Length: 267
Image (tube, rainbow, N blue to C red; front, side, top):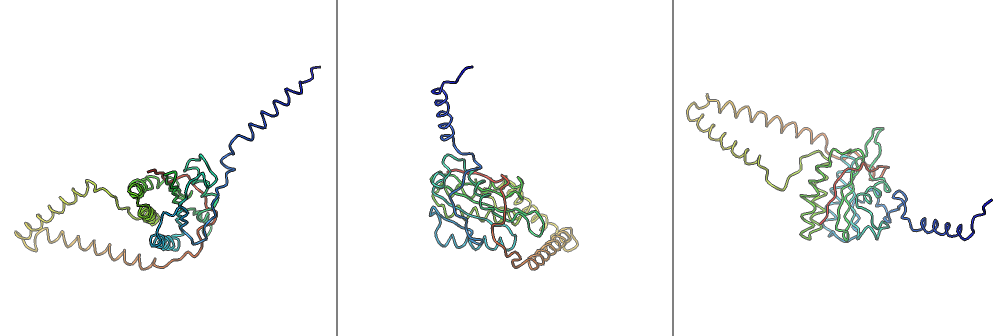
């Protein structure tokens, strides 16, 4: 019967203990060192990147959105991820952990799956920003988040105007949450086509009225156009009147979880 060498056993134990002590903790075990904001506190500017006026405007806009759409936008600026208990972590992972740790957004409302929370995270020293979306968004808005990040946030950051970039990001996310059209920075080629079309219509109208007056096709065409525009404006006015005023009085945190969607930027 072979008796193991005690010295060898001791060496193996020491190696195992050293390996376990030096191995980095699993991602799920990391606790982000950030206190959760209050239920209606939408801005936590720990890196000092916002002036008071901008912070107040963002706060007011986010408060309206939460009341009207039950969708919170939480804006967090930090000095660095390392200073918050996550050295070497990718900002995507950091944002996901923080989103889940705080439970941003309501998991359900009136028995329906909801989970439409939004996190805008900026790490100043890491020079990185992240839009993280709740699971209710799926991956449907990733392209729009990329547009908000690349065209509205990062260009301002590169100019050194962090307050303007953060506010522009919140404006874009507010538009996204309301399912409105996001204004794009560059002028698309379609605008030139529309301009040419308008000029053509003007020429058509002038020629038609000059030749046939009110019996011409131009009169009929424009009468139909203005009728359609009037109907659309009336429908929009009725819709906005019936939906004015907030209906959701809850807070920003209700067990929401990240769905992995969003966009990352650096400057």
